[in-house]
Length: 266
Image 1 (cartoon, helix red, strand yellow):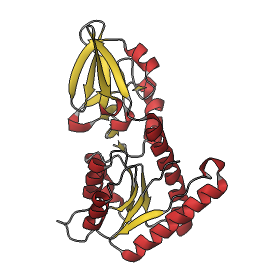
Image 2 (image 1 turned 120 degrees about the vertical axis):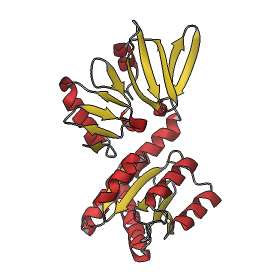
Image 3 (image 1 turned 135 degrees about the horizontal axis):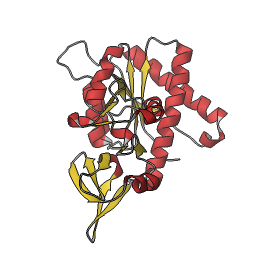
Image 4 (image 1 turned 180 degrees about the vertical axis):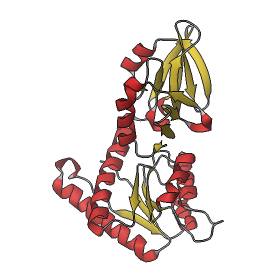
């Protein structure tokens, strides 16, 4: 398995050092208890105590495929850069970054939803030490699996045809696909724009496992969902784009909420 840098950032030096120890202990438990991870030779690469230290290290070492444990409240000064700002910077430099937020205050979580950080987990500092270590082990397992899969398969493209022209868009950029008002066509909305092409929702659903059907008319990419309004049956994406899901698919939507932890439930 490839080497994955692990970086911790917390403005409290003692807490940062303790988190690093807990991470290393969790990796040891993971390798001891699971044959599939026996060849892991990872440990915390760098421990920082502020935004600038972390940024300097990431840039100087051109960190890629990293796992980042970030305190959301990096400073008590309201105008200072926080962990969400740091995560945004990291994502621009390390597109496969696995972000785990460590926080004492759940109130900061909506910040990460609004800014679409895509954190894979949130760990509360208020949990017991044993619970924190267990949680770290679980989230490390997810991070290692995610990174291994991305490295193995690379960036996947979604292919479609407009006339005779074959077009591609990165799977990660797709928000949703819906029936078009034009017969026999579908309307695809991505982070960069919209396009219509000849297609069928059911056939697209069968061929593309990364998309999830939430009604007879809509396929959504759960990785790009910001929030779900369970009362109004609305799925919300960035830039106020949204679709409605049908009552028949409410169990499917509940499964998405359980699987993708950064989806806000309203």
